[in-house]
Length: 284
Image (tube, rainbow, N blue to C red):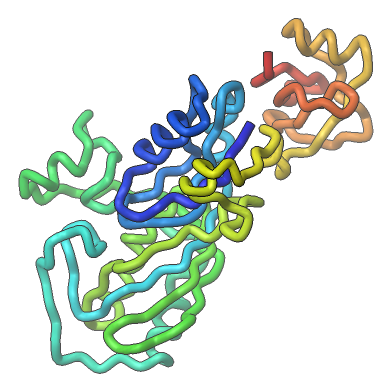
């Protein structure tokens, strides 16, 4: 099963998973898509067998509401870091912010922030950054679908960002600040959506303690994949690790993933191999 958790500020994503495991008394749990300690909002928690699909949930597009402070740059690009550069005599208007933000939409190569778990020569960047080492940060392709200015009260601007998986919004804010002729860092960050999981439908840790929550089926985060409802003997064949024929009605490319159901019961994911479907990741 899945839990749409509203992660509180000040704890890591793994801390949140540990708390959920303790409260719900489950043996296995994992999160799908890390949130920094400064961040709140949607954190999909996979429970028990659903942990098998965590990697697929991490691929979901994301939506964030971000408050950034202009005029200051920190080493972590957020308020948890140390101010390393400051600019006090700058003039920025709402029109200028909107104009600059347009330059950051679409597919682009984004630099990984210095304080991240991405490794260089086998060492996480954050360990190198803590030592004060100036390193060449690797690039990563991301897609930023839209950026909207919600509010501007100098020196703070609130924006909404819709983006692909793997987008570093801390880097985005740092880049926006520099392109404004100033600096900027994140002071508040909320993930308001991860694919079909919305913050309005999330639960807090306190909700869990009060037993006021609802768990979701493991296929709730896999709706982007087409579905195929099987009958016997196909369902049995898939469960036993055998290939089945790809229906002529499904026009799918090699390597495409398919949600598989035994009648109405979700049994896992299959992958297209030629005109066959191979079991990829199944529930036991």
